[in-house]
Image 1 (cartoon, protein in one colour):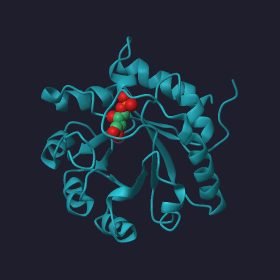
Image 2 (cartoon, rainbow, N blue to C red):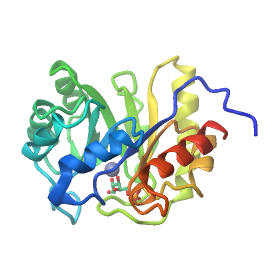
Image 3 (cartoon, rainbow, N blue to C red):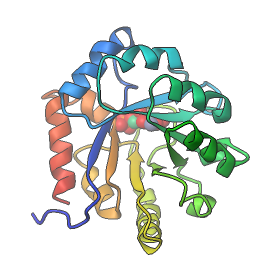
Image 4 (tube, rainbow, N blue to C red):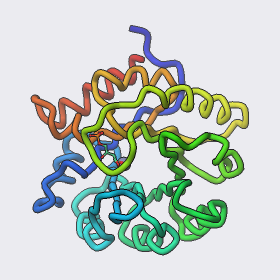
Length: 228
Ligand code: DX5
Ligand code: ZN
């Protein structure tokens, strides 16, 4: 198979959602040892999505366990209040849902002012147009390929045209912006997500439920993406 010509690097970012929450320090260490590029913290407040996960103190307690970056996927009603807390907790990249803020440009600039990288997230029904005036501000765009709130859901291939158009727009503007995809990414879907233009991949159940363990899952996902 011909390897990718695109020069954006492939990154595999396991979500902690399927992890054993009674042993999160061990779990993030296991993910780092298994070759994860980053840890994807799914932060849910029980309002923006019908699920509730971890606060900044839990993230902070895991920070010392690994050296790979932490990214916070904020699925919360008030990211302006919470983003600074997760930056303080050790998250290098904060991703904000377009649908959760009134003044997106200001919210992203506040994250950047605090020294973190900023990302913006689109739910499956949210059009790309909603971020065209902030694309120059962000380090990453996260495209949801499931409706947020839970792991183990079916991949929505309907998001691939959105990724293709986003990639074209980034290239037209000569921007350096990663395209991350989140939801239902596994060995059966990562090739088409890569071909669409994504280069960063969140994987929860595909990593934690792999029959040969997380290390094999991560290397298999990486190999498929690199050869797509
Ligand atoms: C869903 C989360 C995703 C999810 C991914 O709201 O944002 O990160 O945990 O889980 P899988 O990879 O199992 O779809
Ligand atoms: Zn996520």
